[in-house]
Length: 117
Image (cartoon, rainbow, N blue to C red; front, side, top):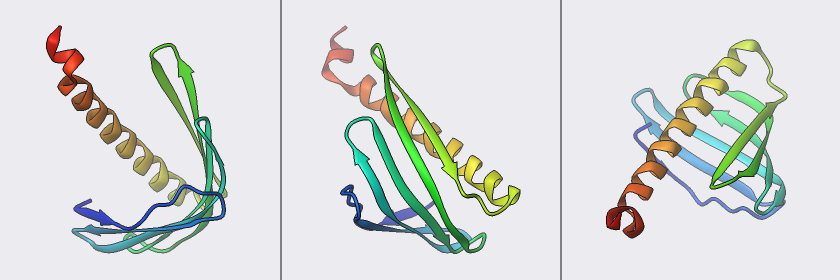
């Protein structure tokens, strides 16, 4: 992914749209938030248009569980139209969560508390 842009609202019934610029072209991710239960659960529809192809509406549930000083994230991605789409989404979630982990590691390392120890 090269660049993304678009407003993301996290209110139930709100629509979201994010545009991704990649080497393969422009892709669009959009959907509607079905449930927003802060801070533990988020449910939304997920549609994809662009490379590698159009993917019809699926549903994603993201749950956040406190585990001491850590947070466990559980993602359930349902209504997958084929095993190929399921594999594509699995790859996307792995890459996204790896990037989130790297970002959070940098934030923690750069925090005043980490640098004073």
